[in-house]
Image 1 (spheres, rainbow, N blue to C red):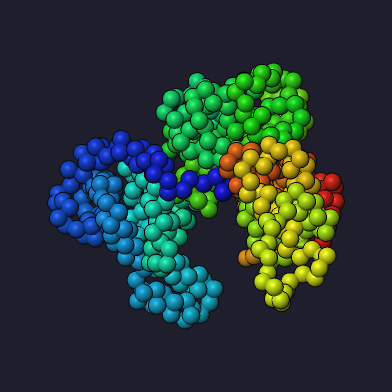
Image 2 (cartoon, rainbow, N blue to C red; image 1 turned 30 degrees about the horizontal axis):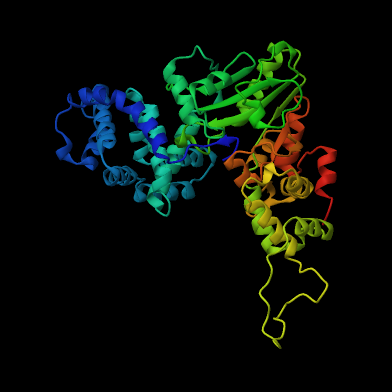
Amino acid sequence: MSDIAIPTSQPEQIGLFDRALRRVASLWRDMASAVAGGAEEGIEAQMRACLDGRGGEVSARNRAARLAQEYLAADEAGRLAFLRALAGFDSDPEMVARAIERVQAARDRAERSAAQAQLRRALEPPRLRLLTQFTTIPDGVKFLVNLRAHLLRAANGDPLLAALEADLKSLLASWFDVGFLDLRRIDWSSPASLLEKLVGYEAVHRIRTWRDLKNRLDSDRRCYAFFHPRMPDEPLIFVEVALVEGMAGSVQRLLDEKAPLLDPREADTAIFYSINNCQRGLAGISFGNFLIKRVVALLGAEFRNLKTFATLSPIPGFCRWLEHALAEDPRLLSEAEAEALLAAAPPPPALPAPEGAAAGPGAAPAGTMPPSGGAQALRRLLARRGWHRDEALAKVLEPVLTRLCARYLLAESDPRDPKRARDPVAHFHLSNGARIERINWKADVSEKGLRESAGLMVNYLYDPAKIEDYHEDYVGEGKRPAATALRRLARGWG
């Protein structure tokens, strides 16, 4: 979602995930062969045998390996059947009911405390023990992360699978607490397998070639990632940083492979230009805020010359919101803006009405402009291929789009939560204690950038002295810290 991107179910990403586990599948098969019985028992019977714990810890590990190997070898229907069987090992409703009765019948605090502990044990579904057993096999934690990625796709509308997904998310959230994670720098000397994963996981600004990757890891660049001790070769989330002079305003210039190297000791600004969550199965378990704060501290300690820490971020929801907002209220544009847009993109000539025909309902009186005229002109201009290369058009569009974008970032809220910024990237950075600093014109003129945000990007400023205050203002009261010039721009009309 954004300059913090989450892997989707794209084929190349699924392939990347599965390849990581296929490397240990032969080891799982060896472990599974040591267990009596086989797939003819059925998945549910094998799961029950795992829970029964017959044969001790070694047998339990081997049974878990056999289950993991069978899941990996199954087709989509087989994997779904596996998940449904696993979800079926839920709490015993009779045991839960009896435990609730004991809580209600408790006569004093001590008795109630003991009864509540029994209730918690009764509520714990056996599938939690099954899930935990997978951690005892090689790459078992990675297996569970991928399992949740499948659950997130499959659980929609299925209460049983949704409950299993919630259980697994709770386990992963405790295992992937930020206190257990390692922060490591990735550079050109990192293992080739890790660099290949970096290329595969980069979803904000695609890495096109090895030369492009080398440029992003050069001496005036930094890349940091969080790793988990049980997944030492799998980045969980990574951030790419450019050390530059002044606040960057164009991602194409920032990633220009022909640009001269800058001595990092001469840089005064660190620009965070791409943040990627790598593991779909860890969606909803946040590392991004900790990553940015840790990297700010690291860079500040390494380069005392750095005075500014900011992002160069996409605005992925802007054009989608703009289309909807103009359809609902064409008066979002001032009269002067509408006139300028219509002059740049006049409507096509209307067909002459039959002689004597009356004007249709809602027709504008002679000599006036219909309210929707400016909105339609704006749509026509943005639909023109290469409009950003026409300086005359750009001059008309820049003040209109930057003002509307400022309004979008500062005033528009998520329909589900009035305190939350509508744009997902804005919400992420504001939650982490950033300030909306500057909107940049023609900052991303890639096809994606033009389609999603009309080429606009935004700088979010991380001021180490104010991060906590800004975080509290936004999370607690929904206040959006922003530069004064941006606030004036957002109030420019309407």
